Length: 254
Image 1: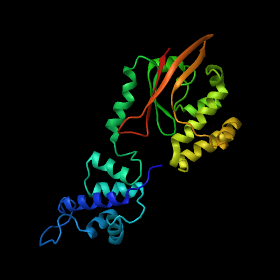
Image 2 (image 1 turned 180 degrees about the horizontal axis):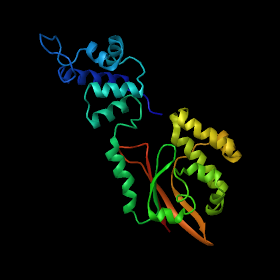
Image 3 (image 1 turned 135 degrees about the vertical axis):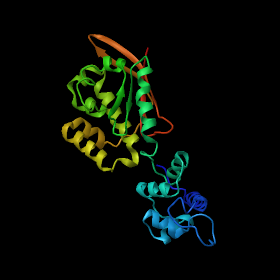
Image 4 (image 1 turned 90 degrees about the horizontal axis):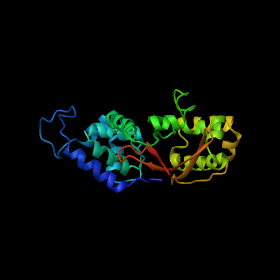
């Protein structure tokens, strides 16, 4: 789990507050200012918090900053994309919205240029994009659902038991991988809802989840049975540098 770097977070915020032009932030700069940039009171006003909270944050005290608070700080200080990302890293948070639709759009399209089965998962393991090779391999799943989800498919679809060799072993590992992947976000509402749904509909998922096993997504051999044929692939997963909440999964034929 990522932790806050209180000292560097405070210094980073103070330096950027002092560099921020008050007029660009909507404040008059007429008259003499004792310090450059925004005053703490002005930054606090922009963020909807008390000046004392800003002071404590800049002093490196152990105060908590939520993702929404970090977004307001980022906007008030007019941070660049790289600066905003660094702010979230110092605060031990994942910036899932700050990278923009342009980056996500490019990622979703990249699977079209891959010649082996490839797809992209979000943090709930919804399949956001896939190529024609993946559609051919997972025909009966990707072409049948409006919002395909890898966990729902694996644990709830009878077709998955026929397609995936050693289904029980693979499904158990998948649950352990998902627990490791969702990590500190497991208590968030959307993930809790998904976990509760799977637990209610699949006794096997409930059993696997209650065992608290954790396994990294290391890839490796994946075997599928289609039309009586045994298809073998080496799976590897990539995490885009600017969207760590997304995963690009490639299946390389062997």
